[in-house]
Length: 387
Image (cartoon, rainbow, N blue to C red; front, side, top):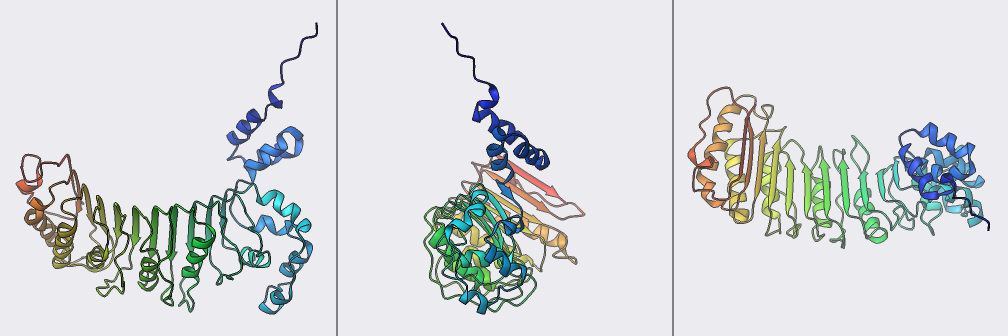
Protein backbone atom coordinates (compact mmCIF):
# COMPACT_ATOMS: atom_id res chain seq x y z
CA UNK A 1 0.00 0.00 0.00
CA UNK A 2 1.46 3.32 -1.07
CA UNK A 3 1.90 6.06 1.52
CA UNK A 4 1.42 9.70 0.61
CA UNK A 5 4.33 11.93 1.55
CA UNK A 6 3.45 14.80 3.90
CA UNK A 7 3.15 18.16 2.12
CA UNK A 8 6.30 20.23 1.95
CA UNK A 9 5.91 23.30 4.21
CA UNK A 10 6.78 25.68 1.40
CA UNK A 11 3.88 24.34 -0.66
CA UNK A 12 1.43 25.76 1.90
CA UNK A 13 0.44 29.26 0.80
CA UNK A 14 -0.38 30.42 4.34
CA UNK A 15 3.21 29.73 5.41
CA UNK A 16 4.59 31.60 2.40
CA UNK A 17 2.46 34.63 3.21
CA UNK A 18 3.44 34.45 6.90
CA UNK A 19 7.14 34.50 5.97
CA UNK A 20 6.60 37.36 3.54
CA UNK A 21 4.66 39.39 6.09
CA UNK A 22 7.47 38.87 8.59
CA UNK A 23 9.82 40.53 6.06
CA UNK A 24 7.51 43.49 5.47
CA UNK A 25 10.16 46.04 6.51
CA UNK A 26 12.93 44.40 4.48
CA UNK A 27 11.97 45.33 0.94
CA UNK A 28 15.23 44.10 -0.57
CA UNK A 29 14.68 40.62 0.89
CA UNK A 30 11.12 40.56 -0.44
CA UNK A 31 12.32 41.54 -3.90
CA UNK A 32 14.93 38.76 -3.85
CA UNK A 33 12.30 36.23 -2.75
CA UNK A 34 9.97 37.27 -5.55
CA UNK A 35 12.71 36.80 -8.14
CA UNK A 36 14.40 33.62 -6.92
CA UNK A 37 11.46 31.31 -6.17
CA UNK A 38 8.23 30.84 -8.11
CA UNK A 39 6.37 29.65 -4.99
CA UNK A 40 7.32 32.84 -3.15
CA UNK A 41 6.61 35.17 -6.07
CA UNK A 42 2.93 35.87 -5.38
CA UNK A 43 3.10 36.32 -1.57
CA UNK A 44 6.35 38.30 -1.70
CA UNK A 45 5.04 40.65 -4.40
CA UNK A 46 1.75 41.10 -2.53
CA UNK A 47 3.56 42.24 0.61
CA UNK A 48 6.17 44.26 -1.30
CA UNK A 49 3.51 46.25 -3.15
CA UNK A 50 0.94 46.44 -0.35
CA UNK A 51 2.35 49.79 0.82
CA UNK A 52 3.76 52.20 -1.78
CA UNK A 53 5.13 55.61 -0.88
CA UNK A 54 4.63 57.35 -4.24
CA UNK A 55 3.07 56.89 -7.66
CA UNK A 56 6.51 56.83 -9.33
CA UNK A 57 6.95 53.01 -9.36
CA UNK A 58 3.81 52.73 -11.51
CA UNK A 59 4.96 55.09 -14.26
CA UNK A 60 7.11 52.44 -16.07
CA UNK A 61 4.08 50.10 -15.97
CA UNK A 62 1.77 52.48 -17.84
CA UNK A 63 0.63 51.70 -21.39
CA UNK A 64 3.20 52.96 -23.93
CA UNK A 65 1.05 55.82 -25.24
CA UNK A 66 0.32 57.12 -21.72
CA UNK A 67 3.96 56.86 -20.71
CA UNK A 68 4.91 58.75 -23.89
CA UNK A 69 2.75 61.68 -22.78
CA UNK A 70 4.48 61.72 -19.39
CA UNK A 71 8.00 61.36 -20.79
CA UNK A 72 7.44 64.25 -23.20
CA UNK A 73 5.57 66.49 -20.73
CA UNK A 74 2.39 66.43 -22.79
CA UNK A 75 -0.09 66.29 -19.92
CA UNK A 76 -1.51 69.66 -20.98
CA UNK A 77 -5.24 70.24 -21.42
CA UNK A 78 -5.14 70.21 -25.24
CA UNK A 79 -3.32 66.87 -25.39
CA UNK A 80 -5.60 65.28 -22.80
CA UNK A 81 -8.82 66.34 -24.52
CA UNK A 82 -7.72 64.64 -27.74
CA UNK A 83 -6.15 61.59 -26.10
CA UNK A 84 -7.95 58.24 -26.26
CA UNK A 85 -7.61 55.87 -23.32
CA UNK A 86 -5.71 52.70 -24.33
CA UNK A 87 -7.68 49.42 -24.41
CA UNK A 88 -7.86 47.30 -21.26
CA UNK A 89 -5.29 44.74 -22.45
CA UNK A 90 -2.62 47.45 -22.44
CA UNK A 91 -3.26 48.06 -18.74
CA UNK A 92 -2.67 44.41 -17.82
CA UNK A 93 0.82 44.84 -16.35
CA UNK A 94 -0.17 48.00 -14.48
CA UNK A 95 -3.25 46.28 -13.04
CA UNK A 96 -1.29 43.21 -11.92
CA UNK A 97 0.65 45.42 -9.48
CA UNK A 98 -2.00 48.04 -8.70
CA UNK A 99 -4.43 45.42 -7.39
CA UNK A 100 -1.90 44.51 -4.66
CA UNK A 101 -1.74 48.03 -3.20
CA UNK A 102 -3.53 48.60 0.11
CA UNK A 103 -1.75 51.81 1.27
CA UNK A 104 -0.60 54.56 -1.08
CA UNK A 105 1.14 57.91 -0.45
CA UNK A 106 0.79 60.08 -3.54
CA UNK A 107 1.54 63.69 -4.35
CA UNK A 108 2.04 63.10 -8.05
CA UNK A 109 0.54 65.11 -10.86
CA UNK A 110 0.80 61.93 -12.94
CA UNK A 111 -1.50 60.01 -10.57
CA UNK A 112 -4.34 62.49 -11.05
CA UNK A 113 -3.83 62.66 -14.82
CA UNK A 114 -3.78 58.87 -15.23
CA UNK A 115 -7.00 58.63 -13.20
CA UNK A 116 -8.53 61.17 -15.56
CA UNK A 117 -7.36 59.27 -18.66
CA UNK A 118 -8.75 56.00 -17.34
CA UNK A 119 -11.95 57.55 -16.06
CA UNK A 120 -14.07 54.42 -16.54
CA UNK A 121 -12.03 52.38 -14.05
CA UNK A 122 -10.44 52.69 -10.62
CA UNK A 123 -6.64 52.59 -10.69
CA UNK A 124 -6.24 50.88 -7.28
CA UNK A 125 -9.38 48.75 -6.79
CA UNK A 126 -8.43 47.28 -3.39
CA UNK A 127 -6.89 50.38 -1.81
CA UNK A 128 -7.66 50.81 1.91
CA UNK A 129 -5.59 53.87 2.86
CA UNK A 130 -4.60 56.86 0.72
CA UNK A 131 -2.51 59.94 1.50
CA UNK A 132 -2.90 62.43 -1.33
CA UNK A 133 -1.70 65.94 -2.14
CA UNK A 134 -3.94 67.61 -4.70
CA UNK A 135 -1.56 69.10 -7.22
CA UNK A 136 -4.47 70.36 -9.34
CA UNK A 137 -8.29 70.33 -9.25
CA UNK A 138 -9.87 66.95 -9.87
CA UNK A 139 -11.67 66.06 -13.05
CA UNK A 140 -15.28 65.22 -12.21
CA UNK A 141 -15.26 62.25 -14.60
CA UNK A 142 -12.27 60.54 -13.00
CA UNK A 143 -12.35 58.02 -10.16
CA UNK A 144 -9.35 58.73 -7.98
CA UNK A 145 -10.90 57.12 -4.89
CA UNK A 146 -11.65 53.41 -4.71
CA UNK A 147 -14.88 52.17 -3.14
CA UNK A 148 -12.69 49.95 -0.93
CA UNK A 149 -11.12 53.03 0.70
CA UNK A 150 -11.42 53.29 4.49
CA UNK A 151 -8.85 55.96 5.44
CA UNK A 152 -7.97 59.15 3.55
CA UNK A 153 -5.50 61.95 4.24
CA UNK A 154 -5.74 64.81 1.79
CA UNK A 155 -4.03 68.19 1.41
CA UNK A 156 -4.12 70.99 -1.11
CA UNK A 157 -1.35 73.30 -2.33
CA UNK A 158 0.96 74.71 0.33
CA UNK A 159 1.81 78.36 1.15
CA UNK A 160 -0.29 79.90 -1.65
CA UNK A 161 -3.63 81.66 -2.11
CA UNK A 162 -5.71 78.88 -3.66
CA UNK A 163 -8.12 80.18 -6.31
CA UNK A 164 -10.31 77.07 -6.52
CA UNK A 165 -12.20 74.69 -4.25
CA UNK A 166 -10.21 71.55 -5.13
CA UNK A 167 -10.20 70.16 -1.58
CA UNK A 168 -13.95 70.56 -1.17
CA UNK A 169 -14.60 68.99 -4.59
CA UNK A 170 -12.29 66.11 -3.68
CA UNK A 171 -14.46 65.47 -0.61
CA UNK A 172 -17.47 65.39 -2.96
CA UNK A 173 -15.63 62.73 -5.02
CA UNK A 174 -15.06 60.72 -1.85
CA UNK A 175 -18.76 60.86 -0.97
CA UNK A 176 -19.61 59.65 -4.48
CA UNK A 177 -16.94 56.98 -5.02
CA UNK A 178 -15.78 55.87 -1.54
CA UNK A 179 -18.89 55.74 0.67
CA UNK A 180 -17.26 53.38 3.20
CA UNK A 181 -14.56 55.85 4.32
CA UNK A 182 -14.28 55.82 8.12
CA UNK A 183 -11.30 58.13 8.77
CA UNK A 184 -10.69 61.47 7.05
CA UNK A 185 -7.72 63.81 7.67
CA UNK A 186 -7.52 67.13 5.82
CA UNK A 187 -4.48 69.41 5.99
CA UNK A 188 -4.75 73.00 4.80
CA UNK A 189 -1.54 75.03 4.33
CA UNK A 190 -3.08 77.74 2.12
CA UNK A 191 -3.28 81.41 3.10
CA UNK A 192 -6.80 81.63 1.65
CA UNK A 193 -9.11 79.43 -0.38
CA UNK A 194 -12.28 79.84 -2.41
CA UNK A 195 -15.51 79.06 -0.56
CA UNK A 196 -17.53 76.16 -1.92
CA UNK A 197 -21.26 76.09 -2.62
CA UNK A 198 -21.53 72.36 -1.90
CA UNK A 199 -24.37 71.28 0.39
CA UNK A 200 -23.81 68.89 3.34
CA UNK A 201 -22.71 65.54 1.90
CA UNK A 202 -23.79 62.04 2.86
CA UNK A 203 -21.21 59.89 4.66
CA UNK A 204 -22.85 56.95 6.38
CA UNK A 205 -19.64 55.38 7.76
CA UNK A 206 -17.43 58.39 8.55
CA UNK A 207 -16.52 58.31 12.25
CA UNK A 208 -13.12 60.01 12.71
CA UNK A 209 -12.22 63.41 11.20
CA UNK A 210 -9.08 65.54 11.58
CA UNK A 211 -8.90 69.02 10.06
CA UNK A 212 -5.64 70.96 10.28
CA UNK A 213 -6.07 74.61 9.25
CA UNK A 214 -2.73 76.31 9.87
CA UNK A 215 -3.23 79.80 8.42
CA UNK A 216 -6.83 80.53 7.41
CA UNK A 217 -10.36 79.70 8.55
CA UNK A 218 -12.02 79.67 5.11
CA UNK A 219 -11.52 76.01 4.21
CA UNK A 220 -12.20 74.93 7.78
CA UNK A 221 -15.58 76.65 7.76
CA UNK A 222 -16.42 75.19 4.36
CA UNK A 223 -15.49 71.67 5.45
CA UNK A 224 -17.53 71.97 8.65
CA UNK A 225 -20.56 72.78 6.50
CA UNK A 226 -19.90 69.97 4.00
CA UNK A 227 -19.38 67.38 6.77
CA UNK A 228 -21.97 68.83 9.16
CA UNK A 229 -24.38 65.88 8.96
CA UNK A 230 -21.82 63.07 8.89
CA UNK A 231 -22.02 60.60 11.83
CA UNK A 232 -18.61 61.71 13.13
CA UNK A 233 -17.94 60.65 16.72
CA UNK A 234 -14.29 61.78 17.02
CA UNK A 235 -13.10 65.16 15.77
CA UNK A 236 -9.71 66.86 15.98
CA UNK A 237 -9.24 70.47 14.86
CA UNK A 238 -5.99 72.39 14.38
CA UNK A 239 -6.97 76.08 14.30
CA UNK A 240 -5.03 79.06 12.95
CA UNK A 241 -3.20 81.07 15.65
CA UNK A 242 -5.33 84.22 15.41
CA UNK A 243 -8.86 84.04 16.83
CA UNK A 244 -11.93 84.28 14.63
CA UNK A 245 -15.13 85.15 16.49
CA UNK A 246 -17.25 85.33 13.33
CA UNK A 247 -17.53 81.72 12.23
CA UNK A 248 -19.55 81.64 9.04
CA UNK A 249 -21.30 78.31 9.73
CA UNK A 250 -24.95 78.44 8.78
CA UNK A 251 -26.07 75.16 10.34
CA UNK A 252 -25.27 73.24 13.55
CA UNK A 253 -22.52 70.70 12.92
CA UNK A 254 -21.59 67.13 13.93
CA UNK A 255 -24.72 65.90 15.76
CA UNK A 256 -23.17 62.51 16.68
CA UNK A 257 -19.93 63.88 18.16
CA UNK A 258 -18.67 62.24 21.36
CA UNK A 259 -15.00 63.26 21.46
CA UNK A 260 -13.56 66.66 20.49
CA UNK A 261 -9.93 67.81 20.49
CA UNK A 262 -9.11 71.42 19.59
CA UNK A 263 -5.59 72.76 19.15
CA UNK A 264 -5.97 76.52 19.08
CA UNK A 265 -6.96 79.67 20.90
CA UNK A 266 -9.86 79.63 23.38
CA UNK A 267 -11.92 82.33 21.61
CA UNK A 268 -12.18 80.32 18.38
CA UNK A 269 -12.71 77.11 20.36
CA UNK A 270 -15.66 78.71 22.14
CA UNK A 271 -17.23 79.73 18.83
CA UNK A 272 -16.89 76.21 17.48
CA UNK A 273 -18.44 74.66 20.59
CA UNK A 274 -21.32 77.12 20.17
CA UNK A 275 -22.06 75.68 16.69
CA UNK A 276 -21.92 72.03 17.74
CA UNK A 277 -25.16 70.10 17.24
CA UNK A 278 -24.09 67.22 19.46
CA UNK A 279 -26.06 66.88 22.68
CA UNK A 280 -23.87 64.20 24.20
CA UNK A 281 -20.22 65.28 24.08
CA UNK A 282 -18.27 63.09 26.50
CA UNK A 283 -14.60 64.03 25.94
CA UNK A 284 -13.17 67.50 25.33
CA UNK A 285 -9.53 68.49 25.00
CA UNK A 286 -8.27 72.04 24.42
CA UNK A 287 -4.56 72.55 23.64
CA UNK A 288 -3.59 76.22 23.37
CA UNK A 289 -0.03 76.37 22.01
CA UNK A 290 -0.01 79.50 19.82
CA UNK A 291 -1.90 82.74 19.31
CA UNK A 292 -3.21 85.32 21.79
CA UNK A 293 -5.55 84.61 24.69
CA UNK A 294 -7.07 86.39 27.66
CA UNK A 295 -8.62 85.39 30.95
CA UNK A 296 -12.01 86.49 29.57
CA UNK A 297 -11.59 84.12 26.61
CA UNK A 298 -11.07 81.18 28.95
CA UNK A 299 -13.98 82.13 31.20
CA UNK A 300 -16.30 82.35 28.19
CA UNK A 301 -15.07 79.03 26.81
CA UNK A 302 -15.52 77.18 30.09
CA UNK A 303 -18.92 78.75 30.64
CA UNK A 304 -20.02 77.65 27.15
CA UNK A 305 -18.83 74.10 27.79
CA UNK A 306 -20.62 73.99 31.14
CA UNK A 307 -23.86 75.29 29.60
CA UNK A 308 -23.92 72.73 26.79
CA UNK A 309 -22.18 69.68 28.23
CA UNK A 310 -22.14 69.94 32.01
CA UNK A 311 -24.47 66.92 32.20
CA UNK A 312 -22.65 64.74 29.65
CA UNK A 313 -18.93 65.55 29.80
CA UNK A 314 -16.87 62.78 31.40
CA UNK A 315 -13.33 63.81 30.46
CA UNK A 316 -11.93 67.32 30.20
CA UNK A 317 -8.36 68.31 29.35
CA UNK A 318 -6.99 71.84 29.15
CA UNK A 319 -3.36 72.56 28.25
CA UNK A 320 -1.93 76.07 28.07
CA UNK A 321 1.70 76.63 27.12
CA UNK A 322 3.68 79.72 28.06
CA UNK A 323 4.11 80.88 24.47
CA UNK A 324 0.60 82.30 23.78
CA UNK A 325 0.74 84.82 26.63
CA UNK A 326 4.37 85.80 27.23
CA UNK A 327 3.54 88.72 29.50
CA UNK A 328 1.00 87.29 31.93
CA UNK A 329 0.83 83.47 31.58
CA UNK A 330 0.69 82.90 35.32
CA UNK A 331 -2.22 85.27 35.92
CA UNK A 332 -4.15 83.43 33.20
CA UNK A 333 -3.35 80.13 34.92
CA UNK A 334 -4.97 81.38 38.10
CA UNK A 335 -7.89 82.79 36.09
CA UNK A 336 -8.50 79.36 34.54
CA UNK A 337 -8.51 77.75 37.97
CA UNK A 338 -10.83 80.44 39.32
CA UNK A 339 -13.23 79.75 36.44
CA UNK A 340 -13.22 76.07 37.34
CA UNK A 341 -13.96 76.90 40.97
CA UNK A 342 -17.11 78.75 39.94
CA UNK A 343 -18.27 76.15 37.40
CA UNK A 344 -17.33 72.97 39.27
CA UNK A 345 -20.87 72.15 40.51
CA UNK A 346 -22.17 72.10 36.93
CA UNK A 347 -19.84 69.31 35.75
CA UNK A 348 -21.69 66.61 37.66
CA UNK A 349 -20.59 63.64 35.47
CA UNK A 350 -16.94 64.57 35.09
CA UNK A 351 -14.68 61.58 35.84
CA UNK A 352 -11.29 62.77 34.54
CA UNK A 353 -9.78 66.25 34.66
CA UNK A 354 -6.37 67.10 33.16
CA UNK A 355 -4.94 70.58 33.66
CA UNK A 356 -1.55 71.65 32.32
CA UNK A 357 -0.85 75.31 33.12
CA UNK A 358 2.25 77.55 33.27
CA UNK A 359 3.29 78.97 36.62
CA UNK A 360 6.36 80.09 38.57
CA UNK A 361 4.76 80.57 41.96
CA UNK A 362 2.19 79.00 44.22
CA UNK A 363 -1.15 78.43 42.49
CA UNK A 364 -4.15 77.97 44.74
CA UNK A 365 -5.88 74.62 44.20
CA UNK A 366 -9.28 75.04 45.84
CA UNK A 367 -11.22 72.23 47.57
CA UNK A 368 -13.62 72.21 44.60
CA UNK A 369 -10.85 70.52 42.58
CA UNK A 370 -10.10 67.69 45.01
CA UNK A 371 -11.45 64.22 45.55
CA UNK A 372 -12.65 65.11 49.05
CA UNK A 373 -15.16 67.66 47.78
CA UNK A 374 -18.76 66.48 47.15
CA UNK A 375 -18.95 68.96 44.24
CA UNK A 376 -17.87 66.32 41.69
CA UNK A 377 -19.04 62.97 42.99
CA UNK A 378 -18.02 61.18 39.77
CA UNK A 379 -14.42 62.44 39.71
CA UNK A 380 -11.94 59.56 39.56
CA UNK A 381 -8.76 61.15 38.19
CA UNK A 382 -7.36 64.64 38.74
CA UNK A 383 -4.12 65.38 36.86
CA UNK A 384 -2.67 68.84 37.49
CA UNK A 385 0.67 69.76 35.92
CA UNK A 386 2.49 73.05 36.40
CA UNK A 387 4.86 73.71 33.50
